[in-house]
Length: 131
Image (cartoon, rainbow, N blue to C red; front, side, top):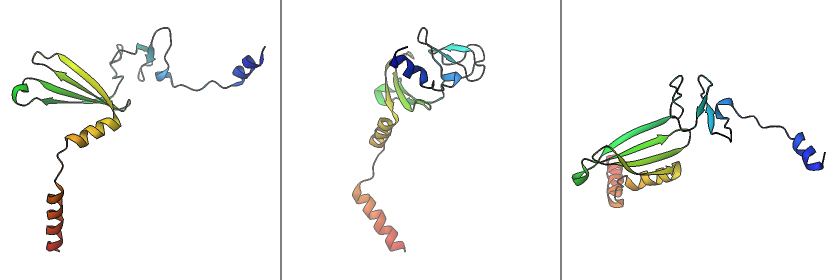
């Protein structure tokens, strides 16, 4: 046995929880509820209907000329990402993009209306006068 083989045999095998084990031959995971093998593309376990990914979904209607279109926002809790998809009048997703949590927070700050500096100063002065 050469030195590299002996060194690799001496290293402990890392523990991987059963529901996270994936084979390389065919991408499979295990259902956390029934522990049966499930292909990774499934959203629900085909045997017990357990959701395999936790997410929150919100739908937003378009405005004006886009009132028959919509934006679907899905927050994937375990993956820590947000996915946006644009839906047309027929109910078909036409585009989608995923953002990590940091980019999603930056987007949220961008679309949140900010109060002007003058309005903030006036409110601060009114609060001081009330004291």
